[in-house]
Image (cartoon, rainbow, N blue to C red; front, side):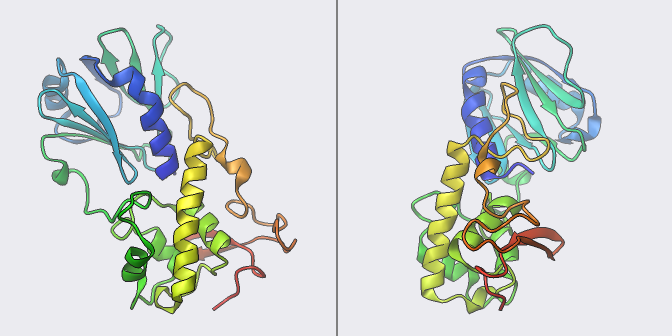
Amino acid sequence: MPELPEVETVKNELAPYLIGRKVTDVSIFWDRTVKQPSVDELRRRIVGQKVIALSRRGKYLIATLSGGDFLIIHMKMSGSLLASRDSASPPPYTRAVIHLDDGTRIFFRDPRKFGKIWLTDDIKTAMPELGPEPLENQFTPNTLMKLVKNRKAPIKALLTDQTLIAGIGNMYADEALFSARIHPLRPGASLTPKEIARLHEAIKAVLRAGIDDKGASIVNYYRPGGETGYAHFAFKVAHGRGKKCPLCGTPIERITVRNRGTYFCPRCQKAP
């Protein structure tokens, strides 16, 4: 699933194609991709509007339009946004195409059909309440402490709860917990102030590294130009069951935490 580093990479690399361009048409090949409004209304409202800004909130990509609307895209499990200025056929699994006035087309490719598009003049109607952005200055160790204290849920589940912290998913939660030497099943309330400080630093570090490496292409993630990211080559534990821990050589294990596959080193991250 595209997480914060992947969506941030898409935002950064898609911006030159989108900002300042006018939408001339929208093609929808899978109607359920459009969550709000109807397909016909989306097409009627968006055509003629210019994209004036592109931003990210959690795992959501937000295009601010000149007419006061927001085009919101969530890539979910398998989505990618690809940009092309040629006349080639849409890539396989394309669910929607945004046509721009310079001939550019933005393809929303989504093999598993979980991705969603919203067009709205009120972002709150499309997006749930999200927690703080982990890379903003306001996200401090004290912020993290307040979010997890008194919570009995496993810390892995807390890190991936978008209402608590926006943007962190499976891969980067596993990497952050390994870096902080914290077992994923530790209850949030059990973390000491020193562990919270380590985890806070680890979260920021793994997310920034993921952005620097243009995201992780484990399965379906592609950058707007069609290139893959390479953050996964630096992963220490995520998706690494059976591989040796880079610190101690112990085989990486996989467990399930709240229905999420979770990877960790049983020696470096002591069980609670």
